[in-house]
Length: 240
View 1 (cartoon, helix red, strand yellow):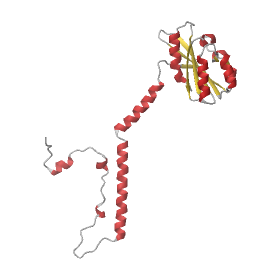
View 2: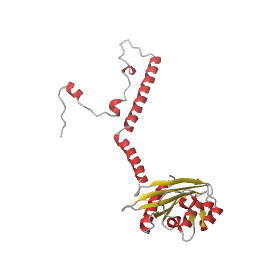
View 3: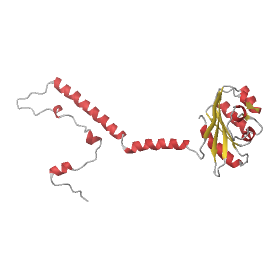
View 4: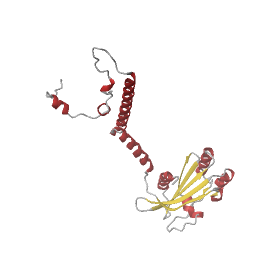
């Protein structure tokens, strides 16, 4: 199918076009750069003037290239790509539960003094670099409130951090104390430290940092799958 164009030349020039690098910054040298028609008597442009015009022309080409790159960079498709990446990062932070800090963060450089059992022995042999502990609360469906202990342990290296995680994953191996036990927390309606230590457990290692979460309901009832689910979601609070 053939395309039709306005017959009138002035109308055709006024037809709308879509701006692009070639429209806004054409790659064309100024008319002065080209040799003017020479008279029959001969003669040519002086070399100094020709070199000057050449440098001016190259400068305009450089500006045109830069303008084209800027035009390409600000197109909606590229901006949308950055926005999508930022949105994806934000989505990784969101979780299933909404947590509110009720105590902490409390920091310490001696992890062994805030641990018990085999975990304490391990931390005496492999001293940590920093301990950060907090308590959070969340409300589940039905209105029941749960309290979560979040403990970050920064070890000297990734191998020690992973060994600590595997140790606390086992039964009868001890753990780190929560703030209810030795943090001087005075908030009302908190579960006991025994209930927290016997509640839902989850852990992860990120580099040289091991994060351990424990969850208990304030009314003391046990629902291990639900408590495990809350603890797993609370792992995203690491480093907060």
